[in-house]
Length: 112
Image (cartoon, rainbow, N blue to C red):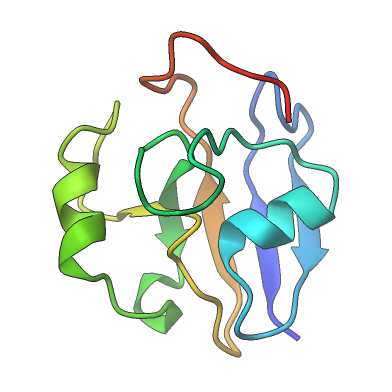
């Protein structure tokens, strides 16, 4: 099972973490299932950018990015060349390291 290393985030994961998730799971699902409450305002339907993550290692092992995700990422706060929407980033058998950006474009954040 691949391991996701989450770099420290002051709100969601202050000390960072390492979690396991089955291949075929989205990064967002894996985070939520392991108690890391990443924002996901559109309920993982690829309609917003609140679950944006920066992939520090293992980018090539994630599922291909489709056009809808590419278009949405243009609106993400703190966009980088290795940015992905965690709801669309599907794990394979390789480990990944991610950083959750400090901010998102969601001004009216809801608790999930």
